[in-house]
Image (cartoon, rainbow over all chains, first blue to last red; front, top):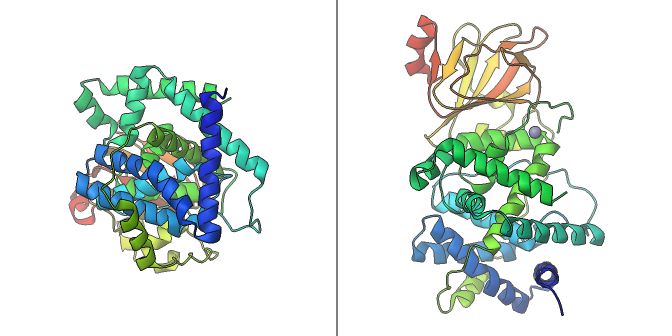
Length: 186
Length: 216
Ligand SMILES: [Zn+2]
């Protein structure tokens, strides 16, 4: 019997393999699997950020198309597939919903490492999994605020208006949540 | 180009808001410029992005339209392969800043802000303002307070104020409680990137008159 933890870990590694197959052989079946899992999540994310269903559908398609086109830039020793897709979706959100540019940090100097080390890939995918579990284990009050910070286009003070909580309470709950996550990731 | 001696870093709140995509453009630019100079904050940003990834996994789903996958494949075929950007050249300024200036330091169009201080406003969305500040060695920026938040990132040289000493790569996060007078180190001119989400409040009479014209 496999635990949820093992299943999630296997799933993470599967997504990494699917992106590799797109990069190496333009594998449409691998893309279809990624699409089936992630496109509805990206669409939900965009709708929670304020896009209507039509705009969210279009943007989710664009996000998935970017995944295909930039598959060669994905580094599984630095991010899980979900994290990488989140960053693409977030950038699309800023562009389409907020009509702003997203200044990105300078790329790191390019090394001569065509293939990331397998042990690094495994460790990163495990940590991503662990972080997901730690977020799931947060007290509801804290987790809700973290999710609001990521999945709505709201600043802390706007969250305060919306939830009726004082700004100080929101800041301290988020701080507590981050402390817990740090502790869980030790 | 990163700096190991950076002492003043981004706060969790700023990194999280940048990762979530909720900062005004001028603040995002300042955060991106600091991360370009700071490996520590780059790694911390990686952790906040990973939170975004973990949350998107558990935020629910919205059904895609019929034929959505095929429509996406058509988009992909219509676009063709994307070009990969060339590696950054060696420059004085972090890449995200150069993108806004349209070049390196020598391309900046400085305007006098009085007392030897020069500034250049960068084109960002209007919720907040980003500007480059040139403070001659030993000179002071007029004493000012803020209505909102001000981020000041040192690009070259150094300054000292009531809080601490800030060198290349250091970022000062000032809120409305702080009235400060940054003074450039005597050894070299200081160049900073400053982002504000409300106009600065100068205490002296002349800077106050100049403020509406200069947008500082
Ligand atoms: Zn830093």
